[in-house]
Image 1 (cartoon, rainbow, N blue to C red):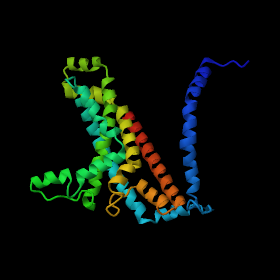
Image 2 (cartoon, rainbow, N blue to C red):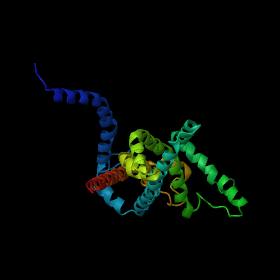
Image 3 (cartoon, rainbow, N blue to C red):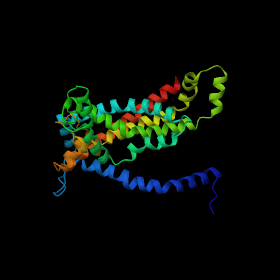
Image 4 (cartoon, helix red, strand yellow):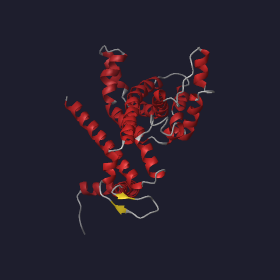
Length: 293
């Protein structure tokens, strides 16, 4: 009979608990990702024969103007959403952390936008942004301001959709920050107040450093969610007007399920994964430098 040390037994127990998730991850996440990379090396239109063409799809991708437009738009969505969804959700969490009457109802309401189906959110905001009968343009008219083509004018569309994305994810990030705030021992903040700190100083010196892991998680999830956002943008603009809201995921969908270029679409998907990995590694490197400093 093989005898194991206590640490080895603990590791085996941990692996047994992790095994169900690892199997699901490998079968439904890792497996399709690897298969997608191999498909990106082929020419395949779903129903025809598969022809191996090497990295030709990636060469075509780097020569496509629509790819760079979608890359720029995706970067713009991330640049607009991340600051607002980080700072805004933190401020909202601070407000919701106050002990006032009815705060539980307000907390429940704040998470509603996140739990709504993205298609429903898209239809709802289409009504709000509608040029002729939208609520937003109605109130602009009452203020003697000309109505705007929020979703039909390329100069407004990207910002308008960004507002909806921020509105959708703000509640979820707020819940994360709220959980972090409520986990901070009151003894620490009370001690800082006794030492002469006001509430703002106590928050900056005590609460904010403790919330750093939550902030890192919020930024990571926000980047991933915004880059992968598809259904909401599809319902609202379908990448239009023109290509003003075309994102990488929209470009992937159009290439694969409209043009039936599955190999090319898989190449786009591979690029998206690589970009996410690079961004996460870059963020991790910045976090290490901050810890050293």
